[in-house]
Length: 351
Length: 282
Image (cartoon, rainbow over all chains, first blue to last red; front, side, top):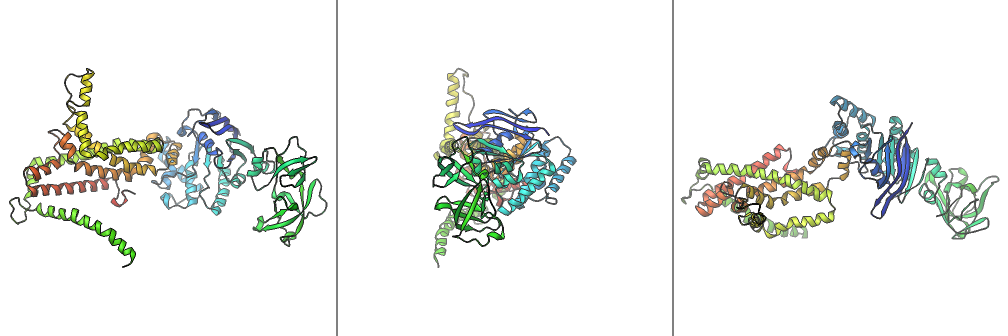
């Protein structure tokens, strides 16, 4: 497996506005990479530069070791699934899928076979003659993916293709996309602002903010070892505490909560602790942990995602995930619980 | 009668009166008089229609006018489409709005004035000829006016906008991503144009073509002022019947023939392009 895509110090400026700055990503063949960030972070610009619809201001994009400078979109070995899908409404499903093949020098029989194969693969056999407007959202999605994949691109770029679907269908398509990618082995670069899509599907995720890549890592590391405050706050639920100052071994939050600080070589300004890092009424002895008593303010029942809000010393509000355990079913609002959090799970950053 | 009904009649009656008194009634009168002899006898005859077919100058002019109007419509499409595309897809909407305003200005001053404007430009002592003489490129004036070319310029100029606007409307609804998707799939610019842009804007093209064809075939000013001896327009024949030979019945018959041929031409064009009239303008 070699490196299929290499972004080398890519920067893009629109006048004074910096859309991306010194972006370096190298993608292995067959990888599923997501670029995750809030809207306006420059992720779509990055995608459009890879596809060739925009030219980078600085840096170079290499696909399979070849620089893409000055190569127009139709000549690049990448295909894109657009956010709006951009299916051609004046053509039927088959004509949409075969559109790209017709541009290649290929016999009619061959292109027909490839197009029908691809339609089978995405579960749309028998839909060839259907008009685009007669399809459901999920079916349109599949046509768009089939239309791009049939071109056998080196890299498939996906620009938030699931954002127009309702939640149920989106969950379903997430799994389907991941499985499809595993099956065909094409490199996927997936743009999204939805962290769950990125975490579930990708081999690696690049978190982007204000044109910069904050962290490029596996979903596991992003979640458990965020390198920056932005990543900690953006990926997954998190409790954020602003730090007022430090006092010897302890840090004091702006609202006055005192917590033993992990060993650091900088002065932290914010602190993040995941909701599930807190242990409620821990059994037995706990080591290397912050221990405190807290009153349950509110219980947020949400099935398997039930959480409680507590206020230690009536100060900072902390969101704590409750394990699905019969032991906690009797908890009521107003109860005092013992809470423990391991030092390792306290993440401090300088912002 | 409840308020809704009152409002309905309040809005409906003026429209109905307008249509009936100013459009339907005169047409009925014209239709009836086209079957009456010029002598004033109160009988009905097909003489007026027969005259059209028996005298070759009439039907030749008629066919020429129709073919020419089709040609001008095609030309208007060829000129307008790039303009519409440029205004909607290439430049920023702000500049497009300003340019649109420039396009509209000739419409404000009326057809007669704009056509006379072309006389000033193209005439024997017009702007172009005088400039060329001043530069020493020519010694005698070029025959720029009173021919088919000058007439075509005038017809195009007064009808182009009615082609540009419907096409712009359909192009505005074209998702740019579709153009990008097509070129991403390896389509050349020409293929994108032929397979994506044109099919999408077909309703606007048909719409604009109908309006331009109607305007051109029924125009009197441009052929009369800018056209030469050879560019006899059928409307001029109608005009002559009414106001030169005072044969109103003959003129009425010609008028109806013009109405019929333009309707039939549009019907054929819709059939050939596989469009339906109720889809036009969607």
